Amino acid sequence: ISKGVGLSDRAAARDAVPITTVTTASMEAYDLFLKGREDFDRYYFDEARQSLEKAALKDPGFALPQYYLARVYASLADATQSKKALEEFKKLSKTSTGKGKDGLYVAAVSAMLDKDTEGYVKGLKDVIRADPRDKRALVDLAWFYKNDKKYSEAIAEFDKAIEIDPDFGYALNLLAYTYAEMGKIDEALKTFERYAAAQPGDANPLDSMGDLYFLTGKFDKARGKYERALAIKPEFPSSWKLAYLYAMEGDYDSALRWADHLITHAQTDGIRAQGHQWKGTYYYIMGRVDEALSELGRAETLARASGNPELADIALRGALWTCYDWGKLELCRMYLERRLAYRKESNQGTPSLNKVYELLYSGLIDVKGGDIAPAKKKLADILALAGGVGEKEQDFNKTAVAHLSREILFAEGAFDEAVRVFKDSPAVQVDLSYYITVQQKNVPFTADFTALALVGKRETDKAIAEYERLVSPDAAVRERALVHPFSRFRLAALYEAKGDLDRAVGQYEGALKVWKNADPGLFEVATARKKLAMLKAKTAKPKGASVDAFYVSPVIVAPNGLLVP
Image (cartoon, rainbow, N blue to C red):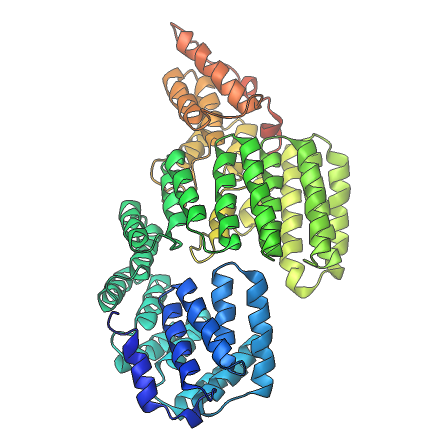
């Protein structure tokens, strides 16, 4: 076991911690707890689960294993067990508060769970006063400061922890992410390298360096780190990131293989559901709509069976948007009804929020079908609900208003105002800690809203420039989004309208390479195939045609909007 983890910490605990100052009467339970916590620090969640479950069995009154089990189960997407462990921790924290600094730590965590941030900070400081060398409390305090954007205070606490244990990988990892968030990339990389040296043979240092390279646009280096992490530990979450890197290059066959790898090595049904959700995302891009819906259906089934209502809801949302983007409006309505029914059944969201969802999605479907009047009525209804929506749901309400507003404005030809509303809405930011943000960046397809408005304004050259950005081979230029074949299809039509047939052919070919096995009957796919055959048959370049000649799809008439959580 590498330096800074493993037997050394546990042996030190046995030698240095009197049994009267911890939260269990069983030293065996405490030793198992420490082993589980060390594996948790390494992001080896299944190993952590095994030790923590044994600790809880050895001493059912021991609170701390339940807290870490709740976190481990959550990381393994096992919502039912996570909830159960958290409830057990809350119960034990009231009846078995424990002694010494561990008892103080239980009190601090309890305050955090009660959303008492002042109590949480005070509790951590109480632990540190009781034991100034408690490196974990120092790191927890540092991470709290980091999340509160108090970077100097965070760095100071991290430094204290690392001074106590220079090879404390958990601290080095989080310190490096803090530097990265501050924009201190060189410091972040040096700290990750120090982390890797402290824990040679572990997967997470490599995965973390992969994240840094991903976020700084060094995608080849990111791929190499993720592959090395998976060679060490095949079940590590690097697989979905590696799949996405291949998808960013347009290699969807490799992306699907790595999604299958995620499913094959998943340790819970919740993780397997995520893998099927990723496959649904890639099939959606590839125009394999039936397969996309099938994969999302599997994700929903697994999520429900494993007690993950939020994950099941995400799968239903993915199916809804898949149908919407590909113009399958009746099927979209069906998935909307299913999603709303499931949200009610699983008690997700308040009735007012779910009503906003119903009005938003059905209004978008109206606009896409060319029926503006009922969409305007639904927008007014959303605005009327604003007063009854809870404080936590106000942002969702505002997002819904902006989304439906801009689609109506676009459909009415108010392109400048529509773009203003679009640009004023918060953009989805990729956060590798939350895989769903990466999917939200791509589904539904909204990136070309501005380009479509420029087409509507007959500013063709500006529209071409925007589409060229969206299909750039440099993923950083695209804000790490996938190149959607819709962009290539629409850019090809613009090139064709200008008489630039060579580049039109190139874009149609690029779209059809991804759509090579697309479902029959999809308008964009059929049109791209027809246009490509026609252009290749031409022997002379014509002057081109009106842009309108190539924009007859309902997808073009009413472009898609941002994903609403």
